[in-house]
Image (cartoon, rainbow, N blue to C red; front, side):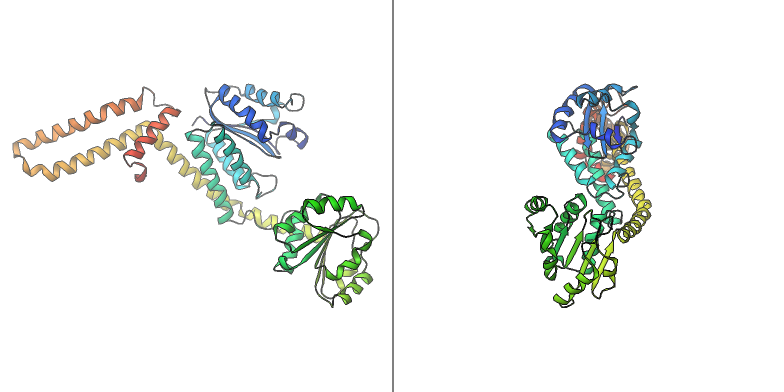
Length: 422
């Protein structure tokens, strides 16, 4: 199979290099047709924060892919940042296997990455719209998406939080089974606070409130997420109606002491209070954890959860690899079925079977001395019927499957029901 994959990812380049070769959707729309025109019969370009990869069927055999690499870097004006050592080149089954590993999440920087499947689908749909996809890449990516779905439904490769923000929300979900009936207060406005808020919204939190020492930042976040705000100087008075507190601010002193939380618990009639302290140094007095019905977790506790979840995900890798092997086998069975000679043989076998059945069914209508002639004549008829389509199918070259041959073989297999026999 003359498939290649040219790429750059988190293993071959640091973020400052990867970001220089990242393609937005608009940029992909501009460059992909040019790549197809210059180098490929069909191709798909995938670009995320951790990888940029080009999958395609070259117009000619490539001894050197440097012109393609130069096309990519030149388009992005990244010549001074990206070099050939950052790129990798994969061929045939290695390229297919790599794609399946990527889409299943086991080749991601974040093991079991849940976003990569949708990112790959978006990249593929863009290629479809640009008409750079062909018969082979269409089947390849369709199989890849099936791999991704199987990996997530048949294994636990994407289960369990492996980020601080998501681990915090996952813990909250265990304390309160239905977050829709509860209120969360986010203290802070940094990246972790923002991600935590998004995860809470993803879990359908009932009410979300922001507070921050700089009120404007809290207002910005609240407007983006349809949330409320409270003045930082007044958030303590609001705790009697809050169920979940997630604090992520850089501050030298505790913003919540044990005595303050004790008072709050009396005001809320000892109703459960869940607190996540993501601050470094810690924002919440550790003595708070000793109070009844107060659940306090710090960043170390979250990291322990993340470590356990990562171990669970790593244990699922062999299961994912088994799925990949099964789907590779299916894909190559399909690909081999498109080659000319097997299809010709199956077509001959099918026609011969029909001929034999009909001769056997009607042979008694002929005289004994004529039966051999009937057999010869019917064989000649079958051979003459098959002669022209077989000649056109062979077209003088059986060594490689091109676009036209794939379409011909696929049509024949469909018309004569050969697909059903696989």
